[in-house]
Length: 559
Image (tube, rainbow, N blue to C red; front, side):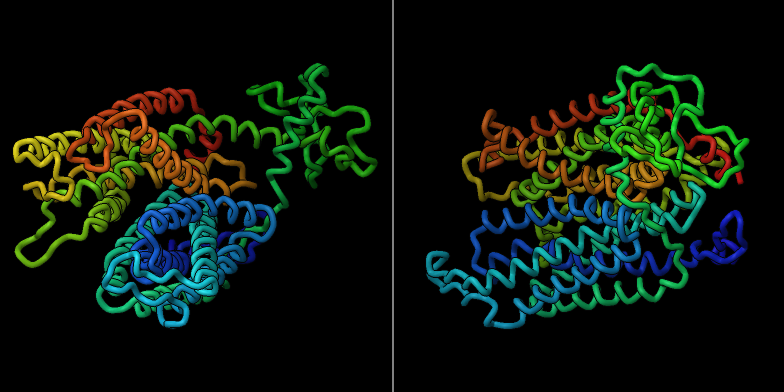
């Protein structure tokens, strides 16, 4: 009970400020509602566009690609707005309303016949009637608003939840439960809601999405009085962008060893407190905070913003530079996952997906195994593995250690994918199916599950580890942006994986339209080798990286 009702207090006041575990049900309830709503329409969007709007499969896939990329990259926009102008609470509230409006538009297209074209005749696709302009307008307006709302809330909500705690260990536990809820709700939306859309009605399925979005928004607003609200400090990106400009302008000035020669933000601290000096790393940037004639106004503030920066702004930029190599290694960690996700569906289509005599696994539902395994192992990691590690080592596993385990499991997943595909191709050759693209190989689709489980368990380690690392190590003014960096990684990896697959199809014969006549196993072995090289790159970056908040981390974890 003491943990549940923990209150955050300011150093100079005993007044209750909010925050703590009492906010947890509201944050997680909001996440569950918004994820159910977003996943319910996005997971089945291609089928909806083909069946209800008579779009060709390639066009429908392109729309889905835009949605997936946008929902992964747009969190950065929401994070910038939260950090710079509105704060997390208002960003989540506004974008939840945008998502609700967009999902409502989609529900209208599914329920009103006037907002959909006439269904295709039995004669085939050539007898399909194209949608009217007004029908396209309502459809794409709904998709755009729902995508923007989905992207704008996802990681701003993660930042707001982490802001309710001050101990890194509590923040790490929150991120574990955050991702557990995210994956569990994604599984439910990709199975239960998709089933309603396919077997009952699109209107009811999208109506469930609208209801889930509304409930999530209502839960979020009900918890308002318990939250610890963050206050935006203006655009931190502008402050950071001024650092290299000011350093270049003062490139000819000699660096000083006296801390008073560098500019610090005016504070109410006593005059005898020594001013902070910039650290020795990346010393050429220290000139940006070096005082020069005319840089400071009569009131002590900066008179020339593009010629003088505070020591804190200089150190913020250094933090970003230090963590960039680790961040880049995560992009190459996610690219194989994105490639495997699309290729696994092609493998599933060519294998026997029957369970018993009456049930057949939909090919598009096979990747859900990743979400299920991630959800299960997030709980096991938080409740068993982390406490066990802490008992053995007397400290919790670090974010970098979690990410490293994720790298290893991801490489193993790619290797298993290659072995399974080699087995499938042997079955193809044994039964002379190379020239029959629509044939079903006498091999159970369950063979695909181990590789997906390995990737899912890896995600349970490296995704929360990455979010925790960025949240702890990014400058305080960029906390929302820090948690959204994982979304940027996914967005970049998604588009790069599409480009890589297209490149392989152009320069090799590994990925023909008929995978029975290709070498998909070679693709997986290539991804395995890339994964090993990237793991080596990660280890080099991790060994050279020094935690900026190491002392605070140790003190808090031992408290």
